Amino acid sequence: MALAKAEQCERCATELVTISIVVDGNDLEMYSCTTCDTRAWSHGGKPVDLAFALSEVGLHAGRQR
Image (spheres, rainbow, N blue to C red):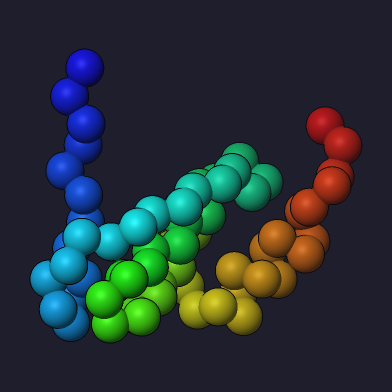
C-alpha cells in the first residue's frame, strides 16, 4: 500500500504534520509545520480559523450517536 503524498508548508516547503478527526460527520484537520511553526485548519475540506475549529469540537465532543 502506498502512502498519500504529504502536504507541504506554503511558507517553507517542509512536509506538514496532519491530524484529522471526524466532527459531526466531517473531517476536521489541523496542519502543522515543525520548521516554521505555521498551523492551519480545515473542516470538510474548506479552510477555517482556529476559533471555528475549537467551536466545532466544543459543540460535538462527547456527543452520543
